[in-house]
Image 1 (tube, rainbow, N blue to C red):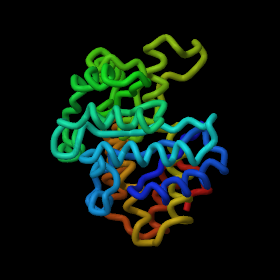
Image 2 (tube, helix red, strand yellow):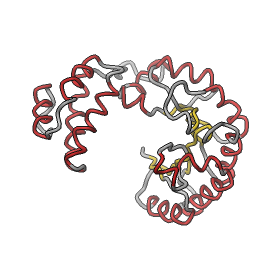
Image 3 (cartoon, rainbow, N blue to C red):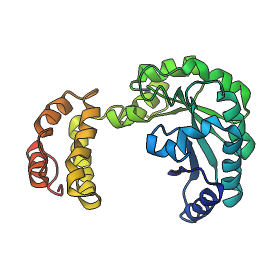
Length: 261
């Protein structure tokens, strides 16, 4: 199931886009009140809205009215912009606007992506709203997931960069929970990822300008260095490559399927 995410600051535009999105049949619609990017915040979107809870309520309500009643509308937030002083008000505004679920990335915009994530601030948000709250931030391992649940009190987690670094992380967490069958995989090996690297490179070459392509592959390999020793070797091998043919040749030599490139 795919729940697509929208970002913006104008209720009319957000409602119109939500209605168009709903027609495509997503599992639900999520609203982004956490993006820390300067270009987004300059235009009043993402985490910038955490400074104005009343505007958040207006935006969520506009989207909720614009889509069918059966379609979930959820929201993702950070703890705040420069500080967490309005965290409870922002979560309550999302609920008041009609959000059925709230994801909390337990850092402020000012914190960016610097560790730690302040999971200990999530319980107060949970107590301030009646809708489910999902914890997010700095979940890289099964142990992180378990500790996040203990500290935040949330049973549900959202995985971001941790899932990109280790695409098998959700399986591993479910296995630790005892929620996987005995026959199901609990880890992803490097050899399992090679076909996906090839598919990713094919999509990058199809959709992006030449100057952007190699960098996207390097970004993924860079994150996976946290989990896979093979990714460290791969990253060192491709980090100076910029030519599409050279990257495609490297993928073939690494054992990726011939559909790459």
